Length: 379
Image 1 (cartoon, rainbow, N blue to C red):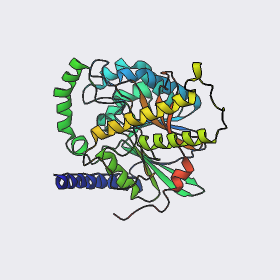
Image 2: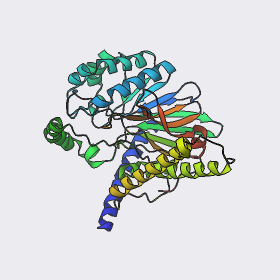
Image 3: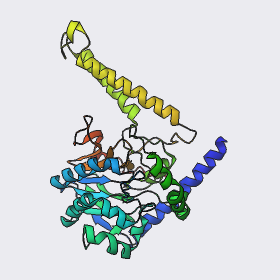
Image 4: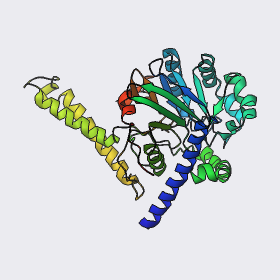
C-alpha cells in the first residue's frame, strides 16, 4: 500500500513539474508577462481563493466578506499593489453575472486598485473562464476597469545586493489531475452534486488556518519543483493551506515556548507581571499556558490528519510560499504581504476579531531571496 501511494505521489510530482516547466518556458519565450518589481517602491499584498458565489449556503466567501473588504480598504490606503491569485469567483457553481451582482462593494474596491494601477489578476481552475479575453471584456472590465488583463501567471523580476531573482505568481492548480487535466469532470461534479449539497447543509471543508507547513501532497509537489529552480521564488494558492518559510506552526510554538522559558529564567526574582489576587499565576504564566495549549491543539490536529503522504521527503526551503485562502469557514482570511523589507503571512481579523492584520509568520525578504542563490538541485 505504501509503495502504491509513493508511486502515485511521484507521478503527481512529475505532472506538476512538467506543467510548471511549461509555464516558466512561456515566460522565457515572451509569451507571458514578466515585469520589473522594486519591493522598496511599494508594498504587495497577495490573496487567493476567495470563491465568491451567490451569497447562499454554497457560497464559501460569504462569511469572509467582512474581513476581505476590510483588508482591501486597509491596503488600498497604504498604497499596496493587490494580487488576486485565482479562484476569485466560484464559476464552477455560478455564472459571472450572479457573482458580480451579489458583491458590488467588493468589486468596487477592486476597481479602485485597478484605477490606481495597483491590481494584478491571475485566473485559477474555478475561474478559468477568465483565460478567455472575450469573457474578461464582457464581464470583468465593465466593473473593474477597461484595461484589465487576466493572466495564467506573472513573473516579477527584481535585483538586490544578493543578485537577480524572479518571483513566479500563479494559482497553482497546474499539473493536478482533477483541477487541471480532468477539470471538465470536476466542474460537472461540483455543479451537479456538491453545490446542491452545500446549499442544503451550509457546510464548508475549509478549516481555519492553524498550521503552515508542507502537509498537503500538492504543496509538496509545488515546493519540490520550486526548490529545483535557479533564483526563483514561487508564490501560489489553490491548496487553501498556507505555506511559509521557517517551519510549521508546531515548530514555531515550540520555539516560542523555549524563548519564553529562557526569558523568564533571565528575569530577576520578583520581576515581570504582577501576580494575581492571593499570589496566583502571573500574566506571563497565562501566556505560556496559552502557547502550550495551542501546541497540543496543533499536534493533535496534525496527528489526526497525517497519512503516509503527509510527510515531506525534503527539508523545507524558502523557495515556495502559499497564501492560504479567503474562504475559511470561521470567516478568517490569510494572505502574504511583501513590504518594508519583510515577507509576512497575515490573517484578518486579529485575535480579538477586530479589523486588523494579525502577523502569523514573518521573515526578512532579502534573506529569503539570498537563500535561493545556488540552492537549485538536479532533477
